[in-house]
Length: 415
Image (cartoon, rainbow, N blue to C red; front, top):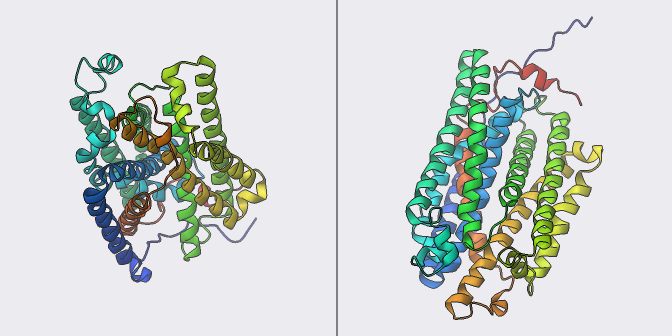
């Protein structure tokens, strides 16, 4: 019998002062980039600004929602391994209120530039009239308010109880969080699906896909675990979480990342196969547009870069246990998530422009992969703002749930 008794690790807090000017630089860069984007777009290209804003907003929305999804799964299945990285997920998820909500506010002024159905009067479009109960101004804003009410409250509430346990050590708070997770999970599934339908599928109100919500959920969950891998390994590199987050945790997160890479490919293929087989014009038009001109090369690139490369990178056991390799793959998936959202959203802007120019059926000349500077400035601006808020909020509590009853089991995890 060992003479030494293993003990659970002591509380650690992120020391923001040791980061020097990094937090201030993030805030300043976000103000400059978002300010430039709004001014440049408003005066020179409002529609490009609107679509670039939508792509970037959906990226931060899905990454934050993905982290919250893993918090709910952690509690629902009573997981041990994820205790030490849960505070990272809780904090990223809690960015919904008020910061992601604030990033959504400019959308109020941009929706007429984004959604073709927004300005169509009743009686003009038969399919829109058929979907009028779902696609109308009042319901659109009402559902948006419901989404942010749920995500803002649920993410704050779960993090609040978790931090309360740090202070009291009450084990019954773990059971309490598990019970709430059971209630929050069905709402998560329903509301995030409707958000995807409203904000992305609604770009073309004639098109529909029964796989679309699942397809985007696969990217959302994968993005949530990818950002957790990057942040936890960055903290380890900075001297935190030593002996707390280990190669064993990377191994499990790598397996989850691989699983959702495969799941994303499965949903993407299923959606394509079902639409191809049915051969309904209202459905096939989605892929016709994205296989036209240079968009075809983007479609092929996504197949290989979003699935095949991460699949190969994560397939072996040593790959999941190598910090550099797993971090590179996680960053790659986050970048490809942006590309995927760009591919989903941007062709519709070009179709919208063709229709306004009087070419409703001959839009091929408008369909080209043409990245714009606003795509980059808006995305980096949003990331810098949320990174600044994350660092400030993350430093207010222990960087892992220090009095969770499963902490010791998490720290001593072996695969």
